[in-house]
Amino acid sequence: MSAAVLVERNLMIYKHTWYVLLAEIFEPILYLLSIGVGIGVLVGTVTDVPGGDPVSYASYVAPALLATAAMNGAMNETTFAMFGKLRTDRTFESMLATPLTERDVALGEIGWAVLRGTVVSFAFLAVITALGLVHSPWALLVVPGAALIAFAFATAGVVVVTFLRDWQDMQYIQLVMLPMFLFATTFYPLSVYPRPIQIVVQCLPLYQSIELLRNPALGVLSPKILVAALYLAAMGTICLVVAVRRLARTLAR
Image 1 (tube, rainbow, N blue to C red):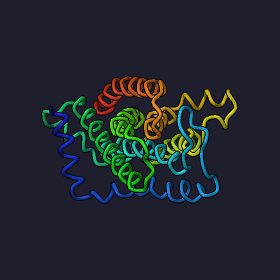
Image 2 (image 1 turned 180 degrees about the vertical axis):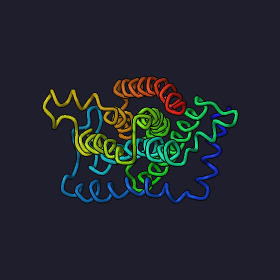
Image 3 (image 1 turned 30 degrees about the horizontal axis):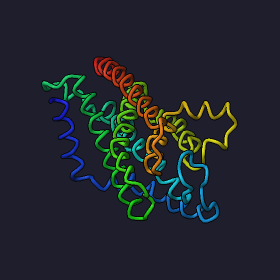
Image 4 (image 1 turned 45 degrees about the vertical axis):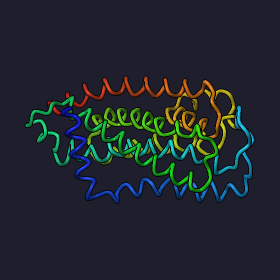
């Protein structure tokens, strides 16, 4: 319940800075228009959809960008925004002077990050639906799927932020996130890689996130969805346990 108070606090703040979220919504839209639609004219139809019908390149790319939006929405909150509260503003130290505990702070920030990532994803889903890029009613599974993705990456973000020493260390996050965005089958199928590289790509959390959303969005119901859901649930649970302990230790210094 105390964690919910922190979520409410963040919600009150974002009532006055809601336009910050627009950047996270417009970013995947720009990728979709420039690459999905623009390059899609050259690519044409994607036929390598296991268990599904051939789709336009834009329809193939859109669910992957949605998964990326959920990831970025959650990670931005628990890394960039949370680092400022942790190191610069010392916001959490003030909170701990109240009945809130370190565990409440961790759960509250993660809960808010999940809410933020889900809202960004839902807004992007509305856009791609309006553009006619959603062809199956199973696409409704995308909403809880986006929340699960946000949970996995939000908890991972809290773990990461406790290791950061200063703002310059943020570049290490981008050093991991950008290659993962480019190579985790966001823009092309897994089959383009040789088998050893495929195994590496399949271990990436963003690959599993894309599988979780792309399959139902394209009307394909396969065991890959369950595997991806279990992967992200396990990742989120493990990171949650570590995040609570790491944040408590960091705040106690």
